[in-house]
Length: 458
Figure 1 (cartoon, rainbow, N blue to C red):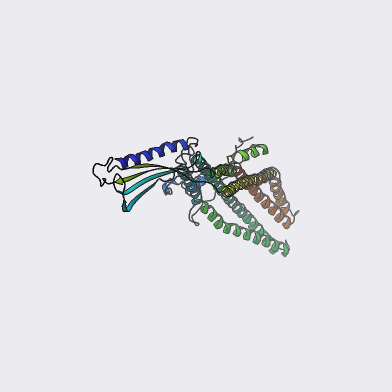
Figure 2: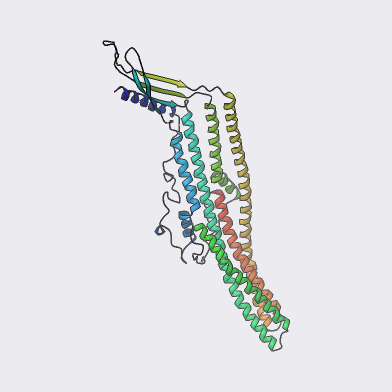
């Protein structure tokens, strides 16, 4: 009974002291990242194929984004790092394990009340007041770093999928437009051949037509060959086999937006997950400074020892065979001030490094944002230019040249030049549409939020 009482006494002291030491500790993060912050990927095993959207000719960009978010191994890895960081919080806030020791005396120790045969001790070390709370808070901040790193990885993945998806759309449109122009130029080449045979056109005209047709056919083959590596890039982001078929996207989603550069800068500073992660890195390093100062204070160890004692050799001895119980209090002596000062300076240097890294990263992100915003507006300008001016004029010029060619008022080379100009403008228009979509996706990645879309006709 005395042994049981001793163990209960030490355990009760440990519980009471733990409550005192942790009274200032913040509440830990949710036990699961899904609590209040639903991630795009689930914990545990990878989702079954039935959980993934089907990718076919009717699939939209949203289906591809959902597929990547559910099955991309890089994003799952970032999510698991967040889960692992969360599990460190209760570890950091816990007391060190108590120490139980047993001693068997080689030779019994004779005392007045009887020979002592063995003893058992239980000891618990308690860090200085507030240490566990600081450790828990530092671990909480580290978990927040991992959470925002996961959010950054998610945004980068979604941008990667969008970028390749838009590039694949452009490739499909470039193939379709080039095929139409190959058909037109094939017809023009046959007309040039017929006129050459009839003696109505010089041989140089036929050669020029064949050269232009050969160049266009080679460009078409290059575009078709490009499909395989682009599909492989998209499948890599989706965690699919590199040769899995991906149908041509039918259309681009709406990519008009009404924002200002000032709004974008504000959203960047408030919502970019990389900057948020660095903010929590700085908070964690600030906690490290406070923890370093705790090294100058002792840890307290409380213990209890029970000694088994046999009956006294002399009959009638008072308290014969009484088992003594000893209470123990010990502290370590922090005398190495030079070492503790170095630990504090190290923590301060890490904090300065974190703050400078955060400032440097913000400067870099702001520069990236400004360039992406410029490219977005430049693409919008080109879209309007090609759609409203250049393509209609080139199309009209081709029709006028065709009529003039029929009446003999235009040279065949003029007709080829007009056709080539229209092809270039059509491809540049499609390129501008895709550039705008890609730059908008980049802006959304940088600011950490989806851009508001403009209503049709605005």
